[in-house]
Image: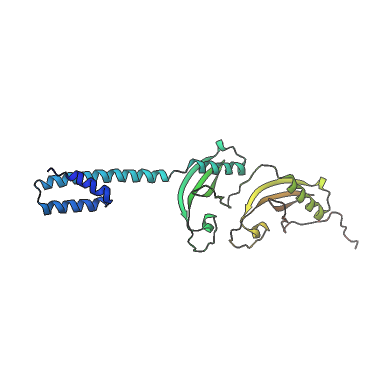
Length: 257
């Protein structure tokens, strides 16, 4: 009866799923104990077969790893859409310059928190850099693409129009404080921003590094010869005037001495 070592090797590995190195060791040990003639040449042939299979497996693993380092197209599109919306720059004029797969240790780190606990609640995803005109914006996105966070340090200035409702709220407030008719007030600048936390939104000078973002606008209003700076949230429910603004009532009269 003719005995095929190659067949035995393949069958043993296929049915028992034993690591190839272990199978090779068992086969070589068997060769020595059984005393087959020409065992050295046979063992060498088997070793070559294992080496070839290991090489193929290693190549497959390498290819898989390389593929995992490629940012999925659907996530790239999601990020570019967000950057385009914030910057009002067409997607065709934006470019992803770098995408690095990362495991963020917890949601705070994922959201660019500067002071985070050591809680280990990992989020697998990507850190992505997008070229927006002359600026580089950094995004964090999870592997599913459902969570997309822009670094709050990025000044995502948008030349888009301030919503009319927010404009009216700000001008009414400025008119009430200055006693100047709304018709004589003018919004000279409106920049959409994400404030790091409520303290920053409220013009706090000494704030913690807590990351509790407030999305809204920074608006500059020409009030007479002055410029007043406002922060307003997206809904318009919070309108805050910079306390450094000097409020002068033009209708007030200086008492006669």
